[in-house]
Structures are given as C-alpha cells and as structure tokens.
Length: 203
Image: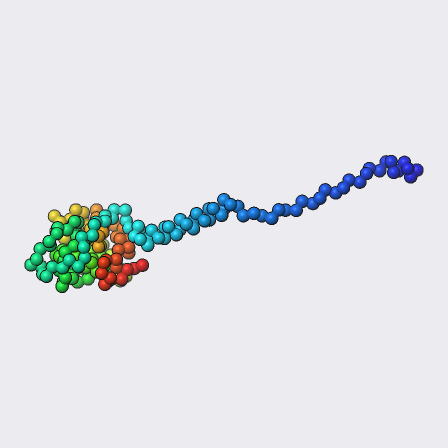
C-alpha cells in the first residue's frame, strides 16, 4: 500500500531561485545630457558677459583711439570719424556734455568725451515727431534712474542715417522707430564700458 502511494506521488520540484533586482545604473545618456547642459549654460553666461546680448542691429567700429585731446572747439579733428555719430576719436579734453536731456545739438568734439567716460548717447533727428520724442524722454529718464551716464540730444537730419541712433564707445545702434527693448539692451550692455571708467557698468 505504501509502495503504491509512493509510486503515485510526483517528485517534488526544486523552487526556482528568486530573482533579485539588479542595482540601477545611471544612464550614460542622462549623464551626457546633464553635462552638455551645464557646458552650454556656462558658455551662454560667458557670452552675455562679453556683450553678445546686444541687439542684432548693433554695429561695431574700430577704435580710433582714446585720450586724443583737442585744446578747444577752435581745433578740428585730425582724423575723420569712422562712424556718424562718432563712436571714438578726437575730442576736446576739457569739455564734456552735461548728462541728461538736451534740447539743443551738441558738438561731436564734446560728446565723444562722454562716451569715452563710458556714457551712452541717444541721438534723434530734429524733425522727429513729438510723440516719439516724448517716448524717448521717458526712456532716457528711466535710464537715468539706473545710471546717470546718459545723454539724449537732437541732431540735424542730414547727419542722421536713421531717426534714432544710440552710441557708446565703438558701438552704434541705428533704429528706424522707437524700440524700448533694443534700446534697453544696448544701454544695459554698454553703459560704463568706455575706456575711461568714470561711469559704472550695470553688470
């Protein structure tokens, strides 16, 4: 009887070993992406620090030299300016235009001294419509609250290639219309960045 019972019983099967989860490995692709993102962030930060946040329309001119001083307005510049309005070069060493909003044109041989100090100049056509001039004045006043080194000045129409032109040392931004975003970018990037550090940069 017992032999028959033993014959009918199935041999016991060994239990399969329990599979243990392998420790998670960091994805090499994820690591690469994170590393690349950090590199890009550093590069972008460096580029912004070096002035590439300037508006696309910004023009850069060769430096014609600093400390090129004339004795007075009786003297003419000895080398023609390479931009209009000028962005470097000869100027009267003893004169500088008052910071702020001017109702009258200012001689280039004076205003170049302002940008040598790191200032920014907003030039506009004398014939510019009153509404736009009002917008420019409001923006210039806003800039003044951030940094006093700003001049806004009318300029004879025949000396302007665009209705509005901003200048800094070696840089010029021509604008066909009032553009607060571009003007703010230019001001923030270039103010205080002249060869003579009389004006402080915003960053």
